[in-house]
Amino acid sequence: IAGAVADDATEVATAAALATADATVAAPAVPAVPAVPADPGVAGVPAVPAMPAVPAVPAVAPVPAPVVDVAVKANLEHKPTPPMVDFVSVDLDGDGGISRSEASADARLTARFDTLDADRNGLLSEAELDHRTAD
Image 1 (cartoon, rainbow, N blue to C red):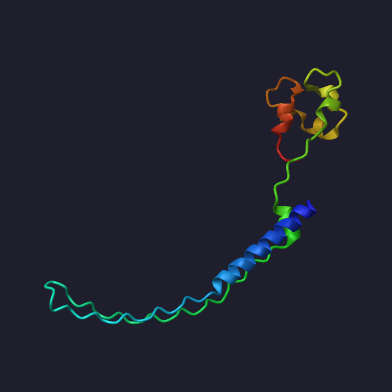
Image 2 (cartoon, rainbow, N blue to C red; image 1 turned 180 degrees about the vertical axis):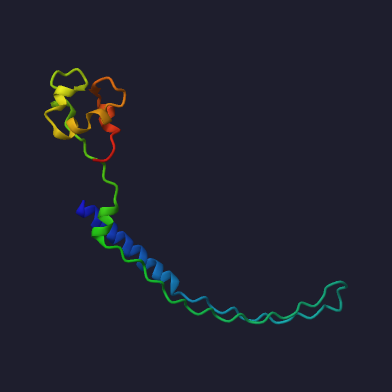
């Protein structure tokens, strides 16, 4: 995980450096365009007025990239909820459900058995344990 976080931090730093470089480039000035007089020999061709020069746009001060603490970022990443119990090791008779007597080997299961037994059949299925609320 630490390697992945370090790689992410490197990518963020690289992107920030590129954004800073892009933000500090000034736009060049556009030169003036002289007027073009009307051609008296051609009817209907009007004169084209001159266009003033456009001044250069000064470089914009770069906006600093947000600083993200690597440890904080690691804590924000999604971490799957670990299984409440090893279902197979608690299902002693292998019938695909954990009975109240099988659950008695684990204090958390015993305390929450009725809440976890969503279908009220007296057995906890793997699906019922997968859909449990946070411990």
